[in-house]
Image (cartoon, rainbow, N blue to C red; front, side, top):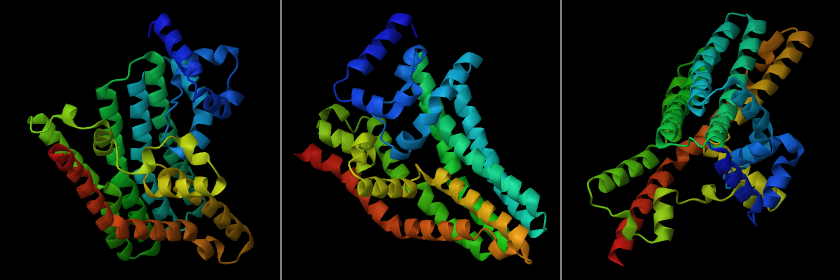
Length: 322
């Protein structure tokens, strides 16, 4: 990005009437005089609350490091995506080590898996920040980022299901993982996007004829998940409700299960030291119950999500006829 362009971006961010306070509240502890050039990396219209509360506070140093190392946004996307891919195997290996009574190695590998889940999430934020810093945002970069999302979303839920199947020596978890796969894959949303792309590509849908409100709802999203994160911090209860929705809607899943895995590790370590039966007293129970409850809710939601996307498509036809 040329220096003049970068300065314009920074000035636009600083002068924005509604977002200056947001930047101060989110990033002020991280910023000093030499950080000013990195202001352009902040996504002022961030919709994910969990990113605003957690990831953004950790991203600035990682962006600086990536710039010093000369890493491009696409390279960071690949590094983050590969972290997620590796985690799909380490979680299963950890379960296998547990049942063969290699408890310490199992705990370390589970801890490493939790790290990979969070590390991949952080790098998923860093790549966007880097693209804004360099001024290299592109559809190809967004495509690469989205590919890893679609690889990880189904792989994440299936890998945990396989691990629980190994851990409990039961195929029931495999069947549950298959059902959970459908809930986390968001096939309803993917289908509606496919239909819309087909219509636009074949010239049967002229987006310019749609009202701005309908265009946003159809192509960006029909739910309030896209609302700015700062608006979701109005009060404590709204914030908790939003975080719960983000865990259900994938944004916070990897972070949630990483925290759950770490708590399980701490409890198992306690059992290993102070209980005669060792870690078998607590064999991933918190992660198991969290997985069961969370994806049962998502499985129940499948027909409602199908209806929601059907209504999303119908908005186009309704708007065209008015």
